[in-house]
Length: 454
Image (cartoon, rainbow, N blue to C red; front, side, top):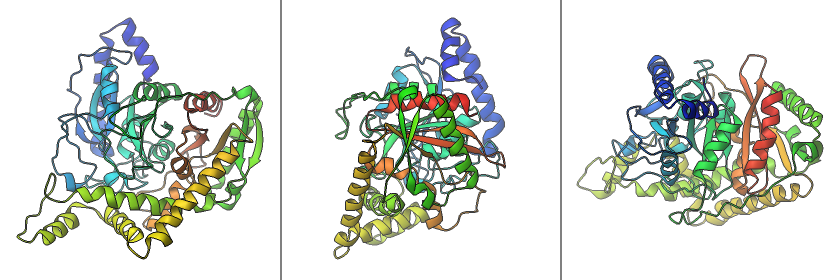
């Protein structure tokens, strides 16, 4: 499938090519969607008369990101047929650049999941092998790009939900520095962690989309001005690998790929050092207290009164209960209950406050690591894509994010880049993490892996 960079060049030389590219994406949708279930809402006929550097490029949007007059479901029955009254800032910027928004993609309900199996609209399937999960929660966005239904996509990344599906589907996924992409129009899961990220076939494509959507937005109180932090080029860079990886359960094929990736970067001039992140093993438990606590507060707005699903009852309390029991799926209810418990009187200090302290420790350990290295290299995921239905225990599912959570807790950027396959032919992704505002620099380093590891 043509890349965004190639499509931009082709359209600039021959504007009629945008019709051909759109039709190819639509054909891929028609031929594969019934099997893959990438989209909740298809909008290939949506027009965009605006011109810009990405004119005519088909882009898919995760269905927890608002697009004006298009259904906004968050993969949940709770929102029913609700249509957004406005577009997210990131979507506005994409449309101002001329892109064609060709649909809203499937996702784990309210972005809570790591496999694409927790949507009220059915399971998404990995285009590489339809018996496998595509990863989550940005499952549909990854599937849409990997199958050629779109040239790029937006997802949301709270604890790895852009990078993990990118790794499982052989794509590039970027989580930007917290605050550099506006959260305005992104339905909140965990506000201190959520970020809109980009997914594409190549590093150049994902970086191009990121540069279009980032920038200060006064409508988002957490928004910050872009303030680039250059780091050395690969021939003079120091890369850290955490010693604590040896204590984690990571597939041998992925560890072997990490060693190969290290050799490729060393051959380009990079130096490697061992670094310490002592509390890395506690990142999942820390996240699984902070994120549900914020989710419990954020999802309280779904009260059966203002919008979305309403199971009417003469008693308001019963109406709340009936609506939420029918509208929220099992995983969402589980996280709301965990978060509400952690925030309740008598447990707030023991659970939520303790998690916040551990978050601060983890962030400080990461910042300390950057005093001895410029970037950090790890696998993106501890496993490659697993069969649909295999992981049923929630704790095992949460462990899928063990390598992608710390960046969210600290608010720093990370990029996942495909670096080959395991012994069964399933994609492996390596992850580069950098200090805040080093997004462009870590992408440049990722290009070396992209070039030499495929």
